[in-house]
Length: 236
Image (spheres, rainbow, N blue to C red):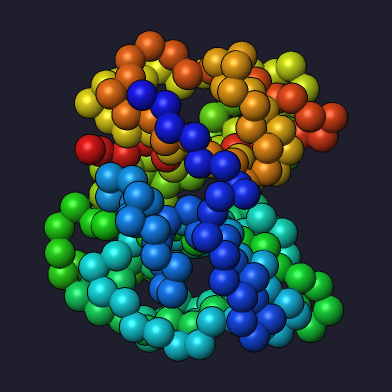
């Protein structure tokens, strides 16, 4: 089954120079029909004004991924994983048995746009850990593996049987996913437009949740500019 999650139907919250869109229930936004998707519990698109950010917060037993779409993200945490995450880079913070972190727009003049993904780990109470992955090359074609449970192909080795991939598609260019019906798949359009299986039109912010499906999912670029798409391959 393929379930559509249009951008326009996401939850919204705004405060202190932040504007956020929520694919699932988060904070003050509650939607009983969208509580998560397998171990994927949070998928927020955040836009931060210059200098705006998130104050220090404590988390435990959650894999926290931040994908910077544009701008620069300043990160600080209690385990020494401090620094600036730049456009196209992916940050991983495994909260483990518990740690604190804070994040803000590192620029005094430019906006920041990022996606935050929170994934439940495969087991509880790890030691907290932190790492970053560089931007995929601009000329990379096909799927690029950003994070995985085994750290394959230089990806971030996160603590769940999840694969996070990205692809950039020009108009008419296609990428395929061979689906396993025992797995879940979440397709998130970050920028540009695409079609899925030549029938589902996808615009920026739109998503698809796929479960109990075999065969091939085909994504085709449909915009004049290059489309950027993230794919999460998840356990049930």
